[in-house]
Amino acid sequence: MRPLTFIGSAIALLALLWFIYRFRARPIVEAQVPGEDWQPTEEVVHDSTTGRTLRIWVDPADGSRHSVAELR
Image 1 (cartoon, rainbow, N blue to C red):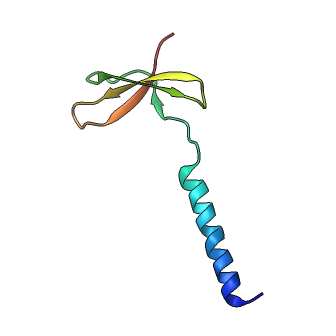
Image 2 (cartoon, rainbow, N blue to C red; image 1 turned 30 degrees about the horizontal axis):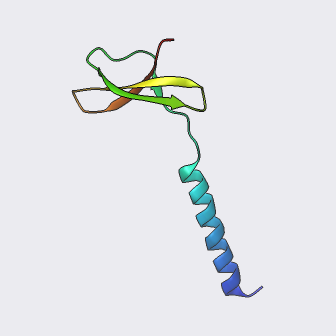
């Protein structure tokens, strides 16, 4: 195998592995209960990995967003 072909193949493999790692399906991190000062938004998402419906809450202190499972 020629050296340039081997290097090109290695770079392509590394790029593929990085792509799979970066864009793989990950479960949505959720809090058990909303924080005391958090405010609910109108945004609701469905976590396909757990089958849960999650409401997005915002912490006005720092603007961070959190997902909390909706009660059924």
